[in-house]
Image (cartoon, rainbow, N blue to C red; front, top):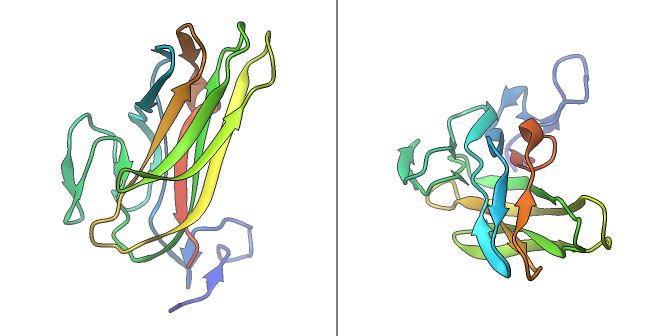
Length: 171
């Protein structure tokens, strides 16, 4: 590793800085709720960015070039090689005992998955997280969710507090 992971200036506890330089960091979330069909795995349309420190997250519905990297829709393609802490949070209404999954994919392959099934009558949240290496050349990450229920279910957003995708470089 070239550099020491540090907190901001006066040790405020904010991570995402190496040698006091902000590195690839982002947080994105869907702009609206989405009805997910039964037994379906779908990409999460994180089309609203709260933070994107170096323009490495594609919030558009088509592939774009970001920092020289071809980046598929709703994907994070860090342009600095290193290890990243990546989190995918998915929340569904759960009035019919829905079982859901939240997934992190790297180059279209699942690298982290979390399932949740709390029973009927509550909202259900699944949080998938992983520390993964990105080569800074062509690696990209995105989020998917799965509705395991026999009926369509609503994935909720609430301005990024219930469903979101985020990452930051740790080394």
